[in-house]
Length: 217
Image (cartoon, rainbow, N blue to C red):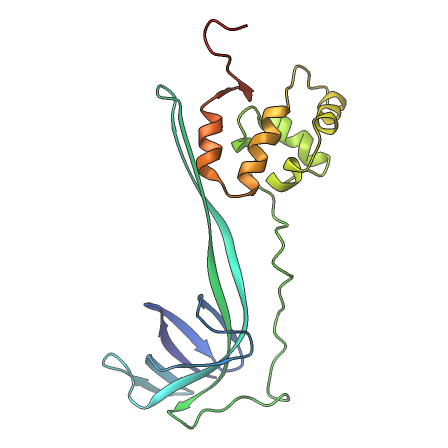
């Protein structure tokens, strides 16, 4: 097995001929060819070449398979005395590369169809993973469980639901005195990625309900 340790975007990856690697997103299009010229080590059977820091005259030729987004990373900060609730979400952007060949600069070439191994394909970039609905002010574990059982597992799905439908789900689950209006309003902001607006709205809520100004009924 021939492989190399390559550098891309300041990170190191093990590139194996005929296999794929996922690197930080590159400004290329699917189907393009990319030459990874920062090679730190090359291994071909029992022979090894180690660079200082790079191996001179060696490159890895790769073809762009797709761009995709990584798993969602969430950060949450809560200060009860100041009523501060800060939510941040992020999904890193990646590029999947097929390593065609590793060799001397200018001599690398794409693998033939017979040489290529099947590549695991990803589904279209449509969000199917569940969001943490408990981040919605007023939704606790029991409410989230009831929504999930009804097929509402993302902020977008909750945002598209009507107050009547959500209220019906709560009633059937035996959960009373629920006010889903505020949940849906929050979900619309969360689904749109408007976390500043989300935090601003939550500052006006207690238990998912808007707080009436002092002196008003």
